Image (cartoon, rainbow, N blue to C red; front, side, top):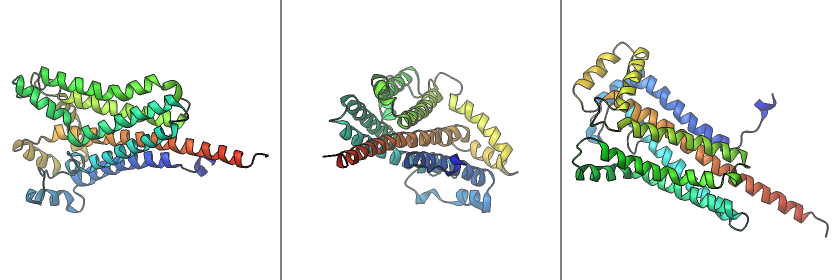
Amino acid sequence: MKILNRKIDLPERIFAISLLFVLLSFLAFYLIDLRNIYGARDALFETSGAYFFFSYQPFFFQHWGRNSGFAEIIQWTFLGGSSVVASFCAAKMHNVNKKLFRFWIIISIAFLLMLIEDAGNLRHTLMSYIQWIFEERDQGIMGTLTEFTYFAILGGIPLYALIRYWSEIKNFTKTKIYLLIGFAFYALAASLSFLGTALEGLLPKNLYTVMGERFYEFALTLGDPQLQSIWEEWNSGSWFKIEFFLFDSLIEENLEIIASGALLAACVAFLLYITKERGKRGNRTNHSPK
């Protein structure tokens, strides 16, 4: 009963919201794309793409997880908030603990770079020029090497901060746990993204298509009787292959929502803790004998 009656703090609420977004996205995928609830799937297929400033695809999961889609907007909000709150944490630590100050400065910069990558897809731009130089029409060795180097640098910045200043940050339990959750999920998402298309020009199928085919078959078992024929007809006449984008747009993007929500929760947990501790010290000073 004590656990049930325990007050849920702000970091837990932030992380719970990120999990709720993921849960709702899978529920909507099931109800709309698989079960055509209230004719919603039919409505998507009957909608003209002329209304949109992006390549319209009649699937909920693609509206959710496409570039600049709803999932990415949620991630940008969490990442942008994380960078701002981490900057506040650094400012709070400037005259208190130089190691924690440096940690939060590096982490704030890392979050900003992650936000820029998420919003701008810089690695795709770099890979495109590299593949042009080396005449790789599909992602080959040089494109994959470029992507690997890019991810290594981007991921290496927060990893350095964690390793270098772990002795300081490990004392803040909630912050530590949320940081580990956040970076673990981002590492998983980045690994899937990298391995999903690595060397696709040299292999019969990229890994995302292989994994997507398993997910595709499972989804068909949950769908209504019309689903298989609708998806097969779509795949036969479109470059947009459902198998690939099920993993790219639904799975990967939801992993990143969990990750970014955990990182924001970590920053908020630290800021609330040090603010509370300063308040306690201030009260003790104000009530101390003169």
